[in-house]
Length: 291
Image 1 (spheres, rainbow, N blue to C red):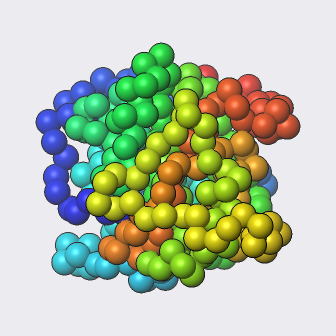
Image 2: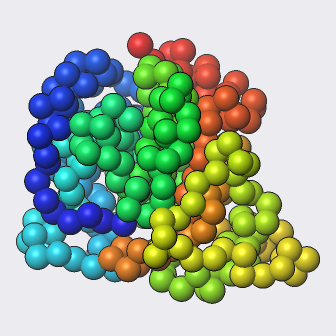
């Protein structure tokens, strides 16, 4: 769900303060074998992450290219300057360090969203409404997740989540949210998987969130008794399955993103509700890498 190539607003003045509150530049947040995860340290590394995103979203998945994106071959929008960019790097690759980036995740903390004038996903889902109902929680919006094809393995996902967990602990995040995408622009092509989410994975009343009016698409396309759970789960993108394993719940309705050519669902993951096995697993790494 891109929002164009507009320049960052006046909230970037607050960005400098937010960065000073953040994790030390270059601090390692996780490592598995030759894969390391940390935050981008400078504009060159953010640009390299945007190039990786372009290769995945535009070259591979066929997202609609704006003129500037096609010229720069980078996926960039006005939120990038106020986000932290989590990077997976392959330390075995020679050359400049920013050319070792093989995966990335964009992290937008609630404070930075205020500085930016809102959350990225609120054009699709009523995230401001959800935030307002939980004034005591600190929200983190996850987005723009992508990994180069040759690195799409359990190990890469594991190291990404090491980084996210360390980041979440450092900033005392209470709730992780964001969109997760099914390929294509036809919800009916994913009827069984979307229906399974609608019938079995919906958020409770406290955490419920609905797609914005005018973009709402029903997810309950099949009756519950007609769904084969095994095939429904097998048909989900790995990112969605990964969130569900952690204990995430799903918002009400999906949204078609014609620019990115995806069907988006909304993920809600209160940190307090993450499955205990993952708290124990990632918690050990967070103690090593968070500051």
